[in-house]
Amino acid sequence: VQLQASGGGLVQAGGSLRLSCAASGRTFSRYTMAWFRQAPGHEREFVAAIRRGSGSTSYGDSVKGRVTISRDNAKSTGYLQMNSLKPEDTAVYYCAASGTDIASSVNNRWAYAFWGQGTLVTVSS
Figure: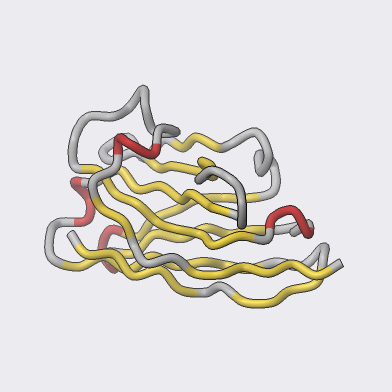
């Protein structure tokens, strides 16, 4: 599956953004989808995941309560709605997908075989 992330940009602290991840090539509903982010000088960090089948979600501690992950299988697109953005949310955001059973490892970057190119989110103070 090929992934294309979009929706990043410059936003003031307290603002909102919605990122999109368009998938092509395979049946999107068969994949668990996730978002990770990486700030300069930092490791890639888990943001959120939505599992294939059940659609259950998981969130990283640093974003819990401020972001919502969702998917539209008919459109082969995943989304990350981010609210109450903070300067420390500034990073390149990557979408990822896995076609295997990773239900217990959704926060592990190495569980994902497919990655989008990233979209930059900059939050100004």
